[in-house]
Amino acid sequence: MAAPTLRLLADLEAEGLLPPTQADAIRADERTRPFSLHYELRALLYLGSMLLVGGLGVLVYQHLSSIGHGVIIGTIVLAMVGSYAYAARHRAPFTWGEAPRTAIAADYLLLLSCLLFLVLEGYLQAQYELFGARYGLATVLPAGLFFYLAYRFDHRGVLSMAITALAAWVGVSVAPLTLFTQGFPAAQLSGPGLLLGLGLLAAGLLSEQLRRKPHFSYTYLLLGSNVALLAAMVRLFEGSSNRPEWSALLRFWLVALLILGICGMLVWYARRTQSYVFLLLAVGYGYVAFTAMLIMLGMFLRIEEGFITLGMFYFPLSFLGLILLLINIKKVLHIA
Image (cartoon, rainbow, N blue to C red; front, side, top):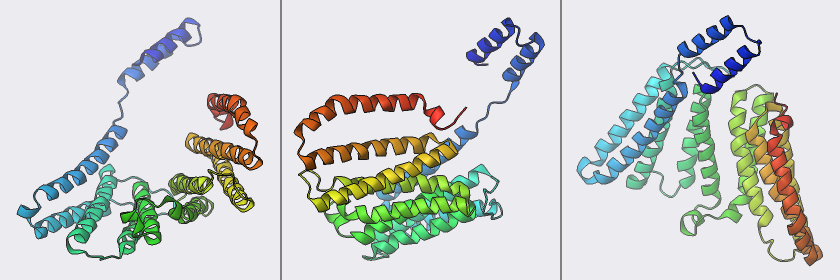
């Protein structure tokens, strides 16, 4: 039994608030209560899936010449099909709500089969150029497959993989050559990334409103808000080093207001679901956007003294406000 529990029982018993018989019963229950290994087992299954796929990749790389392409492809296919077959055998009947869990291993074997599919696809592309230069097809194919499997098996991990593959398809479709030759084209992808993030946010809100896998809304909103806000931040700071013209200032303020609008939606959702994550996301991105608006306004008005004032008063006071928010975060979220 944990020491805080023992101290609490002793204090309650000493103050006469808890009869000795009930205190003894609570102590006996705490000593004999089974310890749950649920999360430990899930973590081990997830780690095992990751290590298996990683080890398979290393094995293929080190023994490619001696094993042969046919054996490698056949092994990957057998492992993928076997994992999927076990998951399909233990899947629950389809429902638009949250499906009951039938077997913990089935969830992770489904995840393993999806990872093996990516390994197989990458291997076929590297050795036989299965998709040629059609990189968009190589990314949209797993995206479509993973979305289907996520909804059919009610698997939020596979849904995250589907959203990631969709984001990769957007990036490859917009800048297929730049991505591989000149590095990550952040400015070029910010527009499509912003649209993708807003689409994911809309999908998350609609999934709750229409009651179509409403528990998927967390994944949609978490990934969508990060994608949309990061893309908007790239737009916000693009070309903002010099004194802006009216057109640039207008674009800057529109993007900043969009960021603040998304942050406001996240605050509303965080209060409704009592979620720390969305509130912290909203505060972090909102603080950066609001501070950038003040700095841009000072640059436009050429208020040099304003930057000194900003550094002397705004940052200390705003940091103090953030600390007070973290201290009273339960009150903000209406958590008892």
